[in-house]
Image 1 (cartoon, one colour):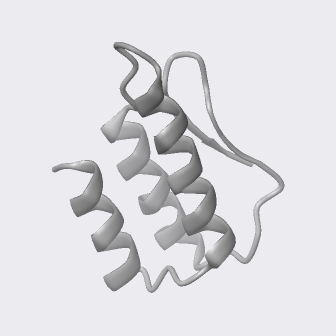
Image 2: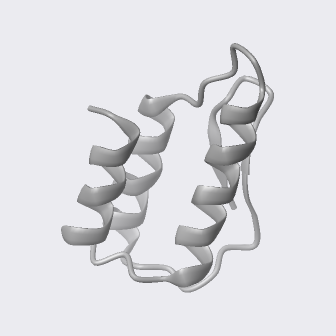
Length: 75
């Protein structure tokens, strides 16, 4: 799956409508894309949404970042 397909799934299936999360995800992707040879982990991205789906929609996490290894980290 591509980044866009995973994001579309999260919006459609998980009903992710939270502006904070969508804006932060977009911001993090842009930051990663701007760095040469730096791609986010799609498995980590997908896993984050599976986690959100499991616990139910969250309003605003304490933190949403991308690690140096390009894994999404949701706190």
